[in-house]
Structure formats: structure tokens, C-alpha cells
Image 1 (cartoon, rainbow, N blue to C red):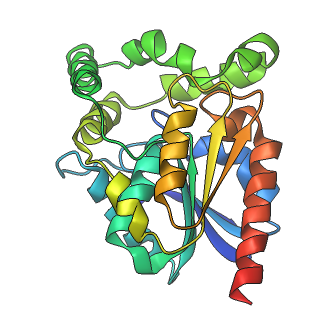
Image 2 (image 1 turned 45 degrees about the vertical axis):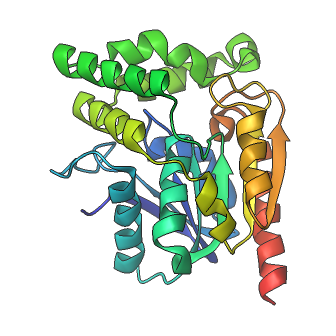
Image 3 (image 1 turned 60 degrees about the horizontal axis):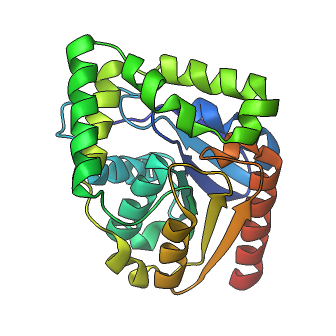
Amino acid sequence: MQLYTRDIGGGTPLVLLHAFPLSSAMWLAQREGLAARFRVLTPDLRGFGGSSLGSDDPSIDVMADDVAALLDAKNIDRAIVGGLSMGGYVTLAFGRRHPDRLLGVILADTKATEDAQAARAARIRTAERIEAEGSVNVLLEELLPRLVGPTTMRSRALVYGRVRGLVQSTPPAAAAWAQRAMAARPDSVGALAGFRTPTLVLHGAEDALMTEDDARTMVDALPDAELITIPGSGHLTAVEQPQLFNDAVTEFGAALTRTVR
């Protein structure tokens, strides 16, 4: 699987993995704002954007292995790997499966716990509806209103419109596949103790999908983690508050550099 990847800038490799049901297009402000400090790689996860879906069974672990293959193809031994929401699930799987490839970890608006039974069943129902209708209308109806916070809804109409456009452009087959993959993901809380690199945990203060408790559960389980809450942002912190997101990532990268030295 070759992931379509935007690769820009120089310096420490920084891989950013996008949220569901978006694509690497969501990282525009990070490519523009972080490329002077990092080599920013923003792949489209399989089935999204410019990447093909392939024939593998739905699996977050498969998505993580795709990222490892991307690093191989780019001749990158180790990188800071970060993800938002679904991208965070993939980052957690990457940390379990490829710990030697990590310089640092960024977990934004995500959680390490597995889905509760009701949430898992809801994902499967959504996947089945997407497959039956051949469209992502259900995501526009049920998920889109919860992707951004009330501050964005009130005062950032262009941001909301951009997010809506990204959701609308999601291939139905990829959306259904990813829902099934997320429903099947294991609990990763126990694995966090094995993460030996520094971790930055970011949480939108207005996030209606991931709670502050979800963020603190990860911080408490990780050996070396910092939690930053981003005000005025819902679930998509990198899109809703890009400057605050970029500032946090820049400082995290600078601290990593000082540690390595």
C-alpha cells in the first residue's frame, strides 16, 4: 500500500495522521506553519484522499503498518508521529507495533480505550447504512455537527464550511471500511506504559466527541506525557485553532531536540 503523501519542509520528520472522515487536506495550516521547523508528512490514510483502499480486512493495525511502510519508502528511520481522532488510533497502533520508529508521539482529540458495546454497534450500523446508500449522507447528518465546537459554529463559518466539504468528499467505501476498523480496535491503555518517547496530548476544550477524562486517562498511563487543552476548539483542534495547535507542536519538537542533545 502506497499512501498518497504531502511531504514538505526540512528538519525533524513529523508525520500527521488525519481524522475521520477527512483527509490530509485538513493539515493545510500545519504544512504551512510547521514546515520551517519540521519535515511535515501528511499521508491520506488508505481509501481517503489520493490513497487507494486495497483489499485488506478493516483494521487500525493495517493502517499503522501502512505508515511504517511510508517511512521505509521515504528512507526515514524515526519520526514524531501524531494523529487526531482516528489518526490518534492509528498512532497508538503504530506505537504498539513499531516503537523503534518513534522520536515522539502526538495524540490529539483521541482516546486509548476501546469502544463500548453500544458505540461499536453504532459504528457498524453507520457502515452498513453507508454501504446500502452508497453515500456519506449519514455522516453529514449525525457526525458533522459534532466535529467542531460551538465557538467555531458561531464565529468561523469558513472553517465549518471547509470541514463540511471534506466530509462530503469522503469515498463511501473508505468511510465504511474505517468505521469497521475503528469498531474492531483493541483497548490500548495497557500498552501506553510501554511508550518510551515523550508524548504530547492535545484536547479541545469544547470537544463533544472525546472528553477531558479520555485525555487524562492517556496522560496518567504514559511514562512521559504532557496535556495541553486548547480553548475555543471542538474536536478538530488542528483546523479550528491551528495557531495554538502549531505552537504546541513546535514547543514539543523543540523540547525533544533539547533532550536529544
